[in-house]
Image 1 (cartoon, helix red, strand yellow):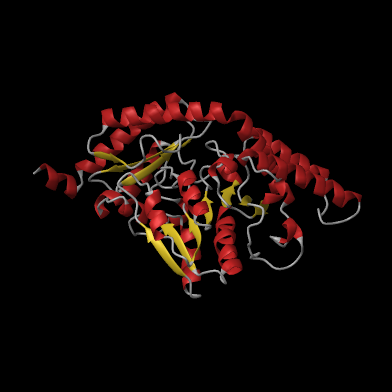
Image 2 (image 1 turned 90 degrees about the vertical axis):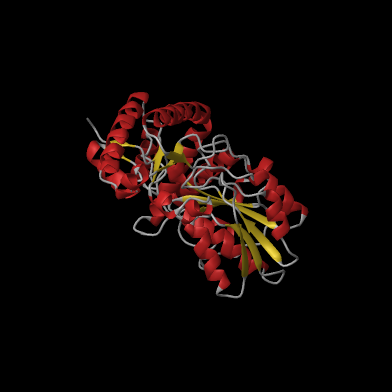
Length: 390
């Protein structure tokens, strides 16, 4: 049987329609969108068409509020550092949470070395931050609040609309890292009220290496890159036109197919959760039962090591992950899971299972059998399991 990918939070395959759009763009031989002759004008028109598709995906009022980037990491860096540098005369304090992606954490660490201060808030045992705690952390010096929409290790969704409203009342800019939610769940930037939103094409079956940053009209933000006047003077450098056209195609498909995708993925997720509870005991599900992505489950399996589970499942023909792909190689327990109150041992026994549109119920059934077999084998040789039994 073919290998089954159950690690879609790390990467998604290109949809056939996206692949065809990118190949057609390559064959067309588009020129530089900044060139002022006919070939450049054709490229610029194609670029703006893609910008319009992406803007519609998040319901932005003006396509010019979309800045194309090299991916989610750049979008996050641009939002946080760009706002900090542009608004330092108003204040040098930023509020965030303990469960953010490393792109946020390390951007803030860099700003702290430049004299900014950061308040990082705890989450509850379900992985959600209290909006009132965010409001209480805001001071007259606060210029930005950054809270992710969907956590990439648990799938839990944050109450960002409520947080955005509190920020708006206090005239503080609000940024959300929505890399793992835009194109996966409905996202209306006007209803949410965010000032800046980071997202990436690969989350909704577009190409990796291309992303977007929504910047609400009127928001002061410095560019990270100096050079030309591309992206309305917000991001210098010749645009990755082929990737952007792929992102535009993926955005159009996501907008059209989102309800059907969510229904399919939710069915697979529910099937997996039912089977997990029936086949393996002493499992901690870290994903919020209601406020969460439709396709991701974080499960901490007691008395085993998550990496061993992952490697043995690979031998069985299934691909899962143990934590964010961006943190792979770290031997430390996940800061996200520790923030939920898990012990180091339970955090190290965690696997992430994330479904894609091509997965089937039959694959989930086979995966549950393989997972139960692997866990039984590992627990049979685990000193932690023997100690618990005695």
